[in-house]
Image (cartoon, rainbow, N blue to C red):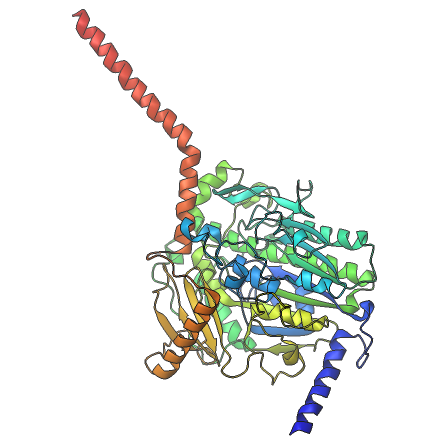
Length: 592
């Protein structure tokens, strides 16, 4: 038995050597032999948005990467962007990183609690910091969203060069913010706030800057790590007109048709079982057939722009691939493509008055994509997340299940896997690929994820062993995964705040709650979640809390504060008028 284990380790090492060295069995792990790593993060994209995953958007460059590598169909992120980004960058649970939730989503009194400040803390190291140990050049462009303080910007967290958006979102053409509480956005280059280039379009500029970093690099013999975090497809959804027009007719049948099509496509592609059931629509959602023609046009246009924004992103990724190919770097480069959470179901309708007063419009044909304020809303988000339930902000599979592609440098080609994996697994996988330990360095919080390298070479080997579970909490929604089962608690307004148990392997839409039928499993998983919650420091939110409700209240308050001078002027004017009338009447009475 011992000899078998030794032989297995030898075989694994030989296979692993083929990953970190261009030639199988090569033992020279010099700078040139270590693979380059490009990590691409899409914003708010569900599992089936990309073309290769069955979506409507044309994404030929990403599709090619997928076909030349391995596609994952059971990768899970946080339902909220910043916690996902913290876990992606560190391999550590978001609470331990200090980014358990977004400050915008939190009551004020929670923002000083341990783990909830929304700032990437010093207990963790980023991928960039770790890869510097292996002499990597490290670059980042795009959305950072782990706080824009001096000591938390990428330039202080291991990145040699960076050009980043500090906040959660913004216009893709200029420095306009997208929420009343964030009217202006801020970009930083190598730690210093900068103005945007005149020809700025987020997807274009992030690739331009990445290429600039390569061109300016003095240590060209070093391997590189490039992290490109696109704004696509975060609100406001915007794309150049040439990428949008051919999608104008696709979404005119409405969200129910799209939801059904994606459900059937998921079966056709083998993402879900053939006998999987279709979830009901949330009762409070609008009905497509009851909308006016103008409303239908608006919703279908927003979806067309969403697809166009993905296509534009893919086009610029293609430019980067072409650059790496011309420079002879592509052959030794691994691409990792994923998304931070499911589709955004927030309804920005109430904020349109503010948006239009701040330079946005809703007429796409008015001026191409510039200034357009697009968002898909809850109904289309529910359709886009099909075949799953829920979307961003919720721990239903639609909010968590995201694409993951690993491609290049001896990654097995044309493979697809449904193995359960979690966002914290990406960092330790990169470390092992780079020849580093997938464990945290001494003195830092533990890396809670697992390296996926063994699974890459032998798909019979799971990422998580039997009885090895994964917990998750964000925005008062929670989940725990174990052996193909999941307990989940979704917060209001769409969730009931109660725990449910599902067998995801046969019920990925989470329709058949088996908690009563399997009480022992249910109680075991609840107990495991409590251990997880205590270990990482999960805090209970106040009664009646909802992430979307908190953002809405803060936005309304900000709008009120913006209009307060005008309101005061009106009130003072009314008071002055009545004083004038009173004095005038008194003079009239005295004259009589």
